[in-house]
Length: 491
Image 1 (cartoon, rainbow, N blue to C red):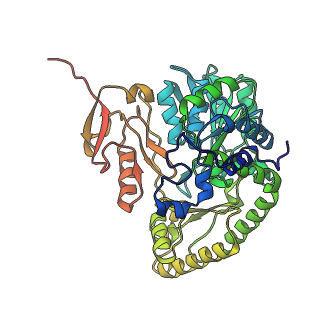
Image 2: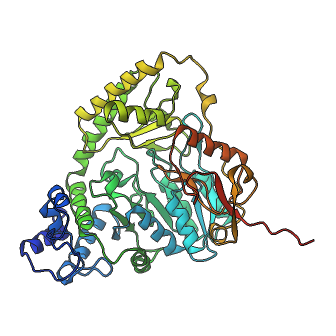
Image 3: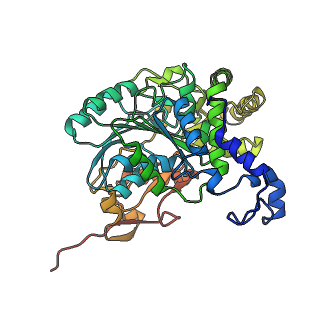
């Protein structure tokens, strides 16, 4: 087989062309039983391959045919020994990574700015997180990666850790020295697990950061749907044989995966892999050029700029992905969330992320000069509307990023402890029993087991005041928080 083949997609199309009589689910029966308006919009072709794991179509839980072939081609494309398809998104793949190496009481070394799926897996597995503080960029109010020094110190203190988890690249496209981190961890015979949610494309162009497999990592959960051209919710889990068991990975992934796997998602992974493997370098080359053009034009706009190579230089910022456009907007005297809404309401432009200080836009092979010129012109208009009212000031004083809370209990113990609900005003000093995060990016402000601080409460309040999507607590108004119940001495 060659990388031009698509065994899964081709097999599904051939099956659909036979037009078999279906006495199996899904109940819409090739679209005949679905809402007509929806059918007309989606199209008969898509509905004809919305199928289930019948004999001719293989089974994601025990692949032996076309899915096995598609996964083997993906492993070859990504430089892995094994690749597993995920229809549970990268979150499912991340949880599988953690649970494949950790059990109750096992230690895992993780950056504190991990995605909520990592912390969910830690709760499920009963593992104990050993947190590494990521490097903080006080100019942008964002977290970068972890350094080789911090990984070395963590392993010296916890050589019995079952894994080291690394974010590479971060949501904002920044990479640390992943290859050296892998070397350090492997010197302790500890596997490296990589959250590669925002880096499917980096494997296919030499001007981008090293991919997890290129750096020698043991597992990588990689979002093909984010930047690789597959459908939303489809991802891959790449595995290198040696320190982890691919058989256990398959078993855990199966436990985490629906038995009604979507063949539309699986087929989209198959064709996305083909395009990345056969055309990826050229497509990404054009994307990099388009992103750099956009960056240069944005940097001509007063009061707005787009981050480039100047962000590099520290031990946590060794390389970056230029297709991620980090655009600080605090020079306009407004928040990133204000800019997100302004772009939506005035220009029908949607951004990837906004926070208190920045917006993030991503450029992919799906973009052209037409779209980026619309963004550039919109930002010029934004600068004129808001920039003239802003006086020169010390912008660094505007950045507010609180310290990481202290972990008092393991996340699992806190999550399953006896709890009570208190008002947010009375919660400082208590141990939280639920997650609080801003999504995107989905990095928790609090995780179960951490001590609530006034500073972090103020940060939550500030995000709420500007309208950012603070999520996690049972109380959607965030007026109350679930905390560990305090047992007072009996008098």
